[in-house]
Length: 266
Image: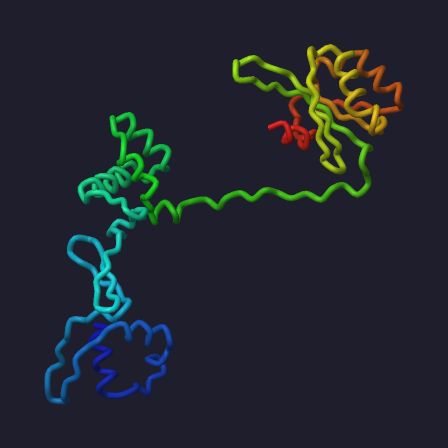
């Protein structure tokens, strides 16, 4: 239909109807070519010839690009799945068709799920590696946007040394032996110190906090801790309070109240 309209417009000249002069319509019509006939001859269509840089389809499902008289084969298949092979690597057509069919029949799973499924089926080697080269338009359209790392402005009402957050975390060495550490984090500047602790006794926690922070930065105005047993001990509260420091304990199920030190321990 568009070829017929294009031939009629070229034969009769520009139409006076403003609707034919709209840019989207003219752009769509210009993509087609047609023969020119006399007034008394029947209008016949001519198969469109792909111009340089245009795309034409083949019965097999693959597309070709006309460039400088040469045909360059595209890897985009009719189902929207393509393979972006690195230089010097290739994959046979039956294997590509099998991967496309498996990916579509499984409902477009993620690459990790598809790789696990193929491993369970006994597939290995180059076929699993080809999953990194497979690109699916359907999966790309349904992909959720990536979450960006949130930025926060440092509190303006506190300065270095005013508020300190304490927390414990465990790290395993190469032999599988666990070691406990005490995190000391300044809220205003995110300055972070990690000290090793031998046990969870309240006196040990205070001694490590005293040697790692108070002796050089001075006692803070506020110390935030969680419900760790060593932080709830009477000795820890008394020793820290003797420096005129207020100790605030967050709720057991509200770790977000000390979220800064929690994130630093990950």
